[in-house]
Length: 311
Image (cartoon, rainbow, N blue to C red; front, side, top):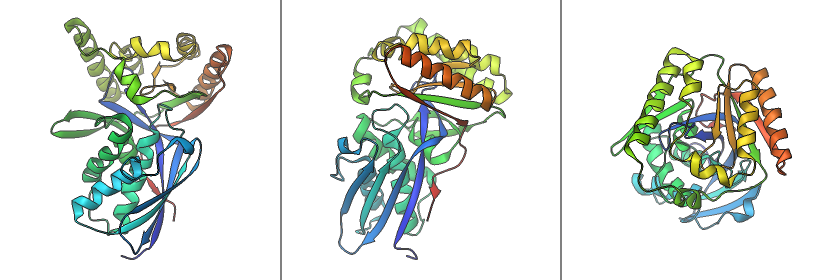
């Protein structure tokens, strides 16, 4: 082992992207979590936290997404190495933009570097998913896969796990607006129906196929008409005050499409320029304010890189 410590930054992500429930996600440049990992002589993992709303996050490694991800990695490689882990939260928990995934991704990426970088990104995803499951109650890769790999990711299958990188069209920009409220991921999943009518499933499958083709052909009009969610949004929209007006404000400002990011409360939109993304962000922030919620907009191209080693 060459280094005794490392700092990693992993970014936020948008999951579902309207038509891709549990199977499409993309990474955004901001916000992000920074995780510092130090080697310690004794076995075990000690976790410390700072940053936005960190007080709500458990420090027990078995209950912490970063800690659990590292424990899974250590178990797989047969190592008893101990670590001190400090997580600086830049992504508030319960935001809908992959807070737990960013911590888990940065943690396994950094721990793997300190252990000699013997595990591939594909295999690191498995350990990141183990960490993500602590927060979401299940294995869902549509946040952590884009955070680890960068870009726009399609999870074709979970058993066996099959992860595909989708093309990122030029001039595709994201706006993610985070209102000052939280939604518990597990609770947001519990309100979803256990069974979907056949005609609804067919509509969703058609939209997912159209969205994927739209990315391949850089057909933004096709992307827009494919960005309709028949699975989760009809049930989760009521959890976000003023959601329909926020969504309409984005579309009125020229968004390609708009929807709920993950379980919410973040709302995302796609557009064809940074200027348009910023204009849409201002409109969405104003719409949230009219519903009594302060919010912040994050505008950027699709982030196409894996977690960054800071030092």
